[in-house]
Image 1 (cartoon, rainbow, N blue to C red):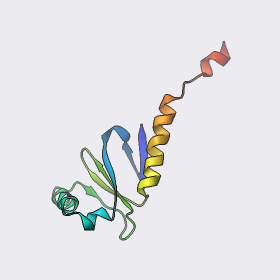
Image 2: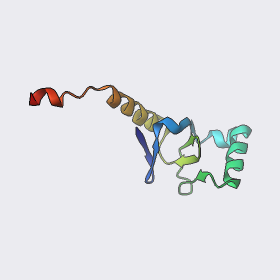
Image 3: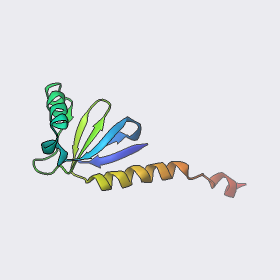
Length: 94
């Protein structure tokens, strides 16, 4: 399934490694170094200045999202719930 992470970016949920709060960027040297290295490799998709609320880490890219971690989590959970719903449309046609 896909997750809309804001600003016209849609990613596959299977590619998501982690979704973390943007505030961790300045408080964690490990996260800061990871983002710095990925910026050098042009693998960071940034949002408008001061608009990022979360960081979505995928297999190939790092996205700065204007949506909160909580909102992204709800969207990801909604997709997994939709995957579990059975389709009964064929039964009504019989």
